[in-house]
Image 1 (cartoon, rainbow, N blue to C red):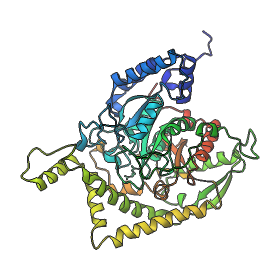
Image 2 (image 1 turned 60 degrees about the horizontal axis):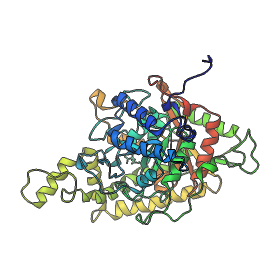
Image 3 (image 1 turned 135 degrees about the vertical axis):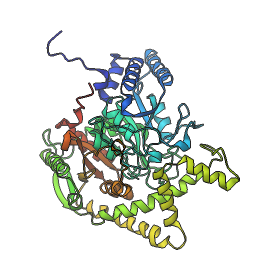
Image 4 (image 1 turned 90 degrees about the horizontal axis):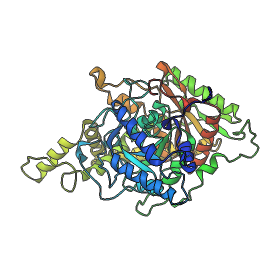
Amino acid sequence: MNASTTIVKPHDLTLAQTSHQLTTGAVSSVALTRHALDRIAAHQNLGAFLHVDADGALALAAASDQRRASGQARGPLDGVPIAHKDIFVTQDQPTTAASKMLEGYVSPFDATVVARLKSAGTVSLGKLNCDEFAMGGANENSAYQLARNPWALDRIPGGSSGGSAVAVAARLVAGATGTDTGGSIRQPAALTGITGIKPTYGRCSRYGMIAFASSLDQAGPLARTAEDCALLLQAMSGFDERDATSAQQAVPDFVTGLHAVRAGATAEQPLKGLRVGVPTEFFGKGVAADVLEATRQALAQLQALGATLVDVSLPHTELSIPVYYIIAPAEASSNLSRFDGVKFGHRAKHYTDLADMYKKTRAEGFGPEVKRRIMIGAYVLSHGYYDAYYLQAQKLRRMIADDFQSAFQHCDVIAGPVAPTVARQIAGDSGHQADPLAEYLADIFTLPASLAGLPGMSVPAGFGEHGLPVGLQLIGNYWQEGTLLHTAHAFQQTTDWHQRTPSSLA
Ligand code: GLN
């Protein structure tokens, strides 16, 4: 063998490369699936999966191989192993939302996003860990197990799509689904050094996505590259008559769009003409020095690629925390009322009457953070407080959205940090409990785009303290996922942050 030949292991391939290998026949879907299952078993300590479906996955893989053997044209995702956040309902695998409330629950139908990825030929390996009902930013609120950051096992991977981020960062899968209500795709992607995109509200159907805060919840992919995210988002997107908030908006070809040539651009300067807005409020106090440094370097790289940096202002950024933490719990308190022990999920064994059954069921089934949100939500919606909290928050939400529209008068994308710090240590390991308020404050840079319903992305942008990953956030105007993916792809052609892998995981 030639000395310079390196043996590429299947898990080192990106989703796009895996897809290419399946097309050429260099590898079979069954072989890829077996390899992934072995790797998942070998890395159980990471806590990424809540459920692994080896038999189901191998059957899907065999069916995919069969399709190719019979000469059927292959779609780009056919035969590719992935996994789903356990907030999407699935009829072949249990769904828990990482809550004891739904222990053992099996849905009679698939979420639309799951069904679309299934009909694109993907092989679902199982269900991924997350914060209970997607409430949290550290995956510490899972009722089942912690998820650990592959870059440092004593650190959080972020959340709520923590299991999705861990599975991709540890290369157990090339891509995974996640959901983002206030940052749950972007923040774990940033903290684990991978790429993730939350599309515009309405781009992906919420049908079968267990509702947390319905006016904010969006599905999206997590993967190692922008190209892989484009491939997954393509299949996930589009109108669905079963979700009244899904949009009729045409879905562009995200993959072709990656290679689109901007007017006036050159090979060296593919981003020429792109105006990148830098919001003052995203670079102030509260952002750790290492995160600031990596973010500034990433902005300089965008400039080197031809982009122009423009100062913009999002003056209501700070208010996004109180606004989100009123609106999201208000919607959650209503959405979670369906978990009452009657139709599905947990039911208390001993009770005196119906009211007692409700109370005991909910007391036993929900974890502390979920209860906290239900109480806050019920309070801000209650008579006498509604106007002061909920209504006021709705008005401010509009001002936050308006800030973005003013900024987009001067720029095409907005760039800044995703999270104020690199991944912190897991609280439970030291016997401490995370401080809920501190957790809420750390969401400051992801909440504004969520409240405005705008697409946002996290792109690996370097490393900070303790060699931990830092993500660059890109925010676009409505339906501009293509611009975000194109920008991130150009960035990834000249940087290798997204190719770095934790040295402990061969
Ligand atoms: N960390 C935020 C929260 O706890 C966001 C969660 C999410 O996007 N699902 O609500």
